[in-house]
Image 1 (tube, rainbow, N blue to C red):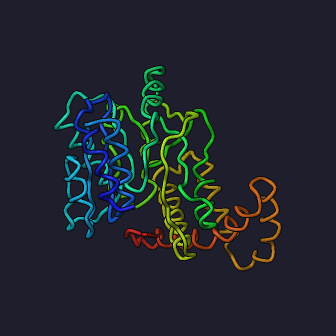
Image 2 (cartoon, rainbow, N blue to C red):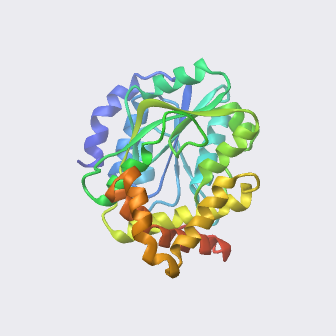
Image 3 (cartoon, rainbow, N blue to C red):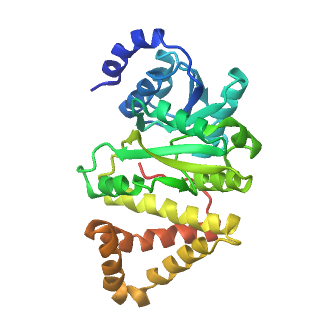
Length: 313
């Protein structure tokens, strides 16, 4: 389905929408048809949205404009990060819709599930000390590749109070602004960092039992999976540096990964695989074990201060 085919039936419906209690920030870079699905799903819920583009060379900017969505184009002279894009959207909403109490972030490769916004707003209104609400992010085609299936399993996080959320979540504006938004220098792991700083202010994060977004990883190559895990390793090493004091879990994660990635311990990988398999199944066990290597590469990248964007798409 082309982007124009997705847009056509939405324009007329969008004209009659009224603003809801939450503004949306959609971020993207060369997402193509996936961005069309993301944008149209958002304007099916609200007129209050902004699209932030990080140097796309496709039709992304024109697409958003054709839907009547304001566009913020980031200056390419400054390194692109998702954190920087989300902040730009947040500050644009603050300037143009200063009365907003809530802001929802969504990645341009994700489609908003109908009914999610109402459920998320209800959850925030029920608990005044909850700063952010997230739900179930599902992979669009988990059967298309083992890498997509791994993403779908990763998104299935426990319901209840949580330490962090992902890139799609509904936030109260007040705690976001109180901590200055996302840390723009982080090339990955910006959500755990933000949620950590928010929780230090006494707020809480909640994962509710509701479908939130449909994600389209479109990972079909081993190299994409490798790069994605390399990003994760980089983010974990940086998180340990930034907030490792008093966080034994982060220290254990980094040390464990270094130890298990050493060639000396490769003969013991079957033991590690078996332990993970009993908890997660053979697919996750295989890739979580092998993932020790790209994770270590990412950690070494950070320790060598090679702070550049690691893309996998």
